[in-house]
Image (cartoon, rainbow, N blue to C red; front, top):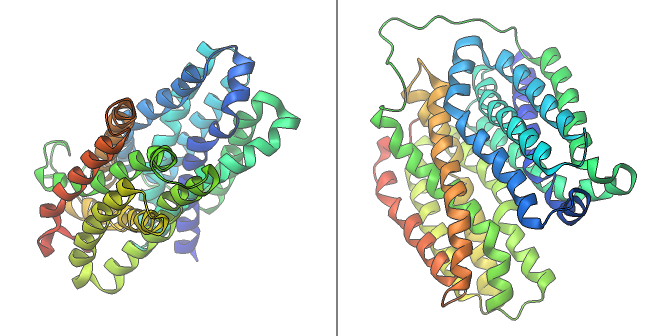
Length: 380
């Protein structure tokens, strides 16, 4: 029972982090009107959050390793609440950017401590995969739910919803999570994770799945609208598959690692090849069935490596498991931060986005040597 409660609390932390990645998108135009700015400035609210989310990964992992994931997770929710409360103060763009930067510290710490809490509560690779799916899905839910709250709450709807969720999950973490134990650094432990070369193959693996997959998901609808005969609604539905399927494929990768560890490296190799093939199919865009198949391959390929990458990082550094996971996650989020605007720029070049997607396909395939040997798929 204690194990299940800890896993549930960890997943709740991940879900809270994920919600804040989608809570603004559904009413971006309404926010722009309330703040008196353009949509580009509203985009800065997400950029500010992503930058601090990325920056806190390794320090947050160290805090989780030192003080325990329950304490770190509770602190994350306090920071999340403070950031969203600050955003409620008034419709000022500068204030909102500062508030979202604070929120990013909370989301980053919540994600990394949630993953650690699942692991330290006894959750295996499958539970880690479920955590990955649960942490991603709320971003999509927020896109659908927040606009329904806008009539009653106005431009404050994203912030009130995030604040309410953070406080609710804070109560759940305090009630469900096992007692926090402060840790001492074990004798002979390595100095840090940044120079640990064993972690970089896992970082590359996760960069080529989550990192490239999310960059692709940000632009796939635009690509299909320009290069296929699909209606805008159909293009959006096909594009959504690249993210929706990750909610399923992340637990699938964890199940393979847990139930059939000997097959993990083959599954990882297949996910890389499938993601590459799916990206090429999306570049072609026609016929429609090929684009749908490409989106399916991308969604499955982007999710399977999640649990092996996180589990492998924790196994490689038992003295600093959360910090090791933080390094892996930092690398992938850096790809998202840099890659998203770069691929966007290729829509103004010849091919209208196809050059950017071709580069993503090549980068995805370039990660294949990382998973060419069984030792890459670390198993607990």
